[in-house]
Every structure is written in C-alpha cells, then in structure tokens.
Image (tube, rainbow, N blue to C red; front, side, top):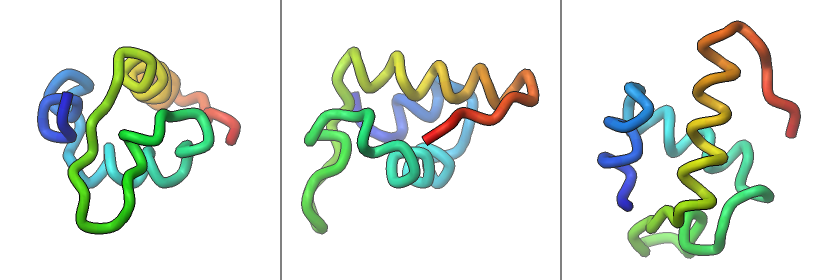
Length: 65
C-alpha cells in the first residue's frame, strides 16, 4: 500500500502519514522508511501500526515512541 492509500484509509493527509512514519519508524518495516528518493510501501503490519496511531490520536491519547 502506498502513502496516499494509507492516508485515505486513516482519513488523514499524506503529510500526516509521512510525519508519523518518521516519528514511529522504529516500529515499521524497512519498506515504510526507504532511502531518500525511493517510494514507501506499507506492509499489513505497518498499516496496523499507523491505524493504531490514528485511533489513539482520535481519542486524544498520545502514542509513545
């Protein structure tokens, strides 16, 4: 899944997905945090992590790094 698709799934902007990917990259696959100039590719695990972050933020909770 690419950044736009994940942003649509979580009802947030692509910039938000990129920011969360940077903030929580230790919990994501290498495909979600590729070298500069490479396209991001989010695995099912990455999608679950990002959706969890989105849910926490919606409820006012802050995920811990």
